[in-house]
Amino acid sequence: MPPITIVDTLEIPAVGDSSVIENDSLQVVVKTVVDQNGNKRLSVSAKTKTIRVPHYVKVECPPQVKLLAIPWYYKVYKVSFFILILLLIVALARRISSSIV
Image (cartoon, rainbow, N blue to C red):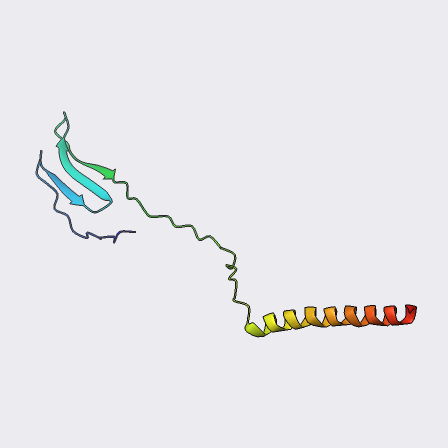
């Protein structure tokens, strides 16, 4: 919001003149008008200005997934597991072949 200015005193203009109070968002014009009977009266008109206020929307995003590099010991573990399985299969095949013969 723009700052609000308070005016506490205003000189009433002479007949036909006008006083203007202007702000960033508002313009007030005060005029002294004489009607057909000779009576003085004040005419006050105001114009508002449109102020664009930026509108931001906060959007929650899920956490981003980050792939980490696989440590070297996981690779060693994986290779040694397959070697162990291969050795067990070979041992089982030897035992079966020796029992058949």
